[in-house]
Length: 377
Image (cartoon, rainbow, N blue to C red; front, side, top):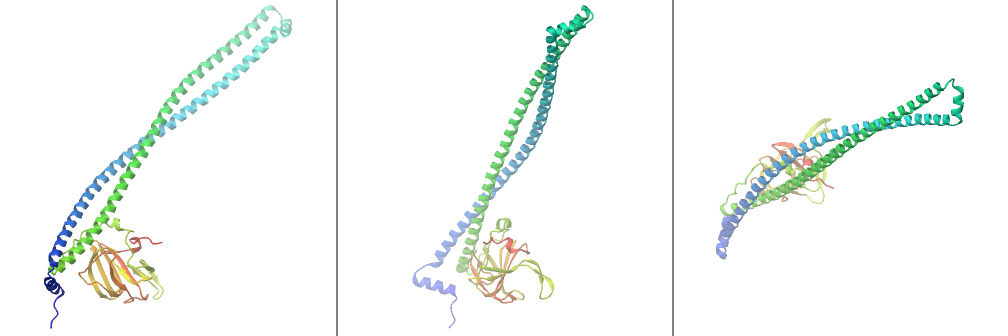
């Protein structure tokens, strides 16, 4: 007696029990379809918000660049202002020094006249030949005193002018410093605004990532329900993934130690160089191999050099390869959820013993998986 197909058996059993499984499955499929539409709508909204915020960030960066240029110009003016003030201070010190020298000379003249006015004056009077010479010498002293007094007064006037110029320079300098402080505060405010916008972008990226992951899970579930109800899988969307969003954030396919690394390596066995397109991981506590991201199995069979190999296509631009498997739980056309066990690690086609060969390809080009997987402690 032939065995009934599983789907037919389920339908007959549900009819016998009076339970309409297909109707409930169709209802669930419709619910999932609505959820998928809602998530796509949210993703579109997030995309528009992100575009608007990125445009704001571009404007902020232009404003920041302008503020920096203006601040640098003000800094140059402040520096020149300080140089002028320093120059006026030097001139003031020189004039003050000249005044002190003139005062010293004036004091010497006054002391000499004072001496002449006492006994020294009598000696001086005795030594001169006539009275005319006495008065002539006295007038010379007086003229010298007047000259020195005028000199001191002129120096004082110059100092007063210098003080006025210096005051103007200091006021201008204070104004420039105030402008500089305002510009620097503006630059800080712009930087803070940019950081807040970047935080929003980061939040949107996280929201998009969560929505996309949920969307993948719902589409996989919808495909499975569609296969159960209508006997054929529902085709999943295969768009392009924002690869930068995933880089460094993907979970490891298996827990264990990396024993072979990506790239050009020297082979001591054959004394030559080999190119590794992926890495090999020796399993730790468990041999379970998990899908690092939701996708569709496009290959599940033995392949020379890889042993039992599973290839999952996650998007048009992202594939992952899982080789040397002992046992495979997926076949071509199956969907795989993120974190779902898809195989057990083994040693088929391996020269390292039990291990998992793992590759990541973007646009069909091999990438270093360690740059895409989460950093481990």
